[in-house]
Length: 278
Image 1: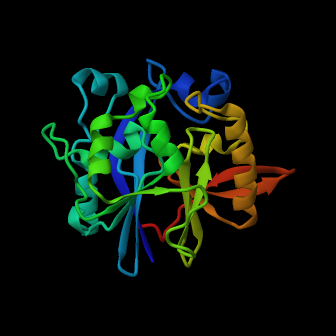
Image 2: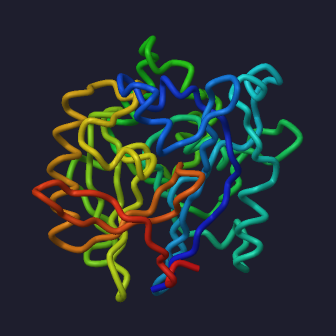
Image 3: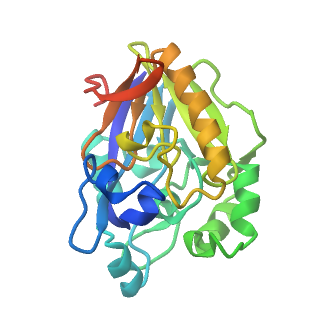
C-alpha cells in the first residue's frame, strides 16, 4: 500500500465559524488569522494505492464558482487537483474510486471541474462513494447547508451510473480502509481509517479540521449538531489513541499530521511527520 498527499489548493474561512464559541485569546495562540479575521485552510486530500485500486479521498473545490463566491471564500485552486495527481504520476482516468467524506463544496466540487467554467466528470472511470445519509441530506436543500451543496455536480454524480450510496457501517475494502460514519458535522460524514503497514492513518476531514480541534470542546460553528460532534470526537479520539492511529489533517494549513498522547487523562495531538505519506 502507498499513500500520497494530494494538494487541491486553499481557501479562507472566518475564524468565528472555524472555532465557534472558543474565545479569540485561546484559538489565536494556535492558529493565525488575517486582518479580516479569516483563517487560511488547506484542501489536502489523499490518494491510497493498493492492489489494482487507486482511491482518491475527497477532491477539493475546483474553481467552478462565481467571482463573488471565489472572492468571499478566498479560493485558490486553479488546476491544483490535476497537477497534484500528475506529480504523483497518476492520470485522472486511472483513478478507480473516489470516496467523498461528504458533499460540501470544498470536498467534492473539484471532481467536476474540467476548467474554463465547464462542469463534467474529471474521473470518468471511477466509482463514487457517499453515505446514503449524506446524499439524502445534500438533496434535501435544508436552509443551513444549501449554499454548501452544488446541484450541478450532484446531478453529474447521479447520472454517471457509478454512484454507490453506503448504508451506515457499510465497508468497501475491509482490512485496508475502515469507513467510520459521523453525524455531528453533517449527517453521514465518512471518516476513513487507512491501515498502512507502518501505521494506521485517519483522514480527519471536517470531523477534526485542524490540530487545534483535537480537543473535545473545540468544534466549528459549521457543525450542525454540536453535542453529537463533541461526543463522537471524544469516543473516536480515545479509540485512535489506544490503537496508536495517526491523524492526517485535511484543512490545517500549518500541520499535516499528528499522533495522539494521553497526559493526565486528556488526549492531545502532537505534530508529527509521517514520512511514509509521499
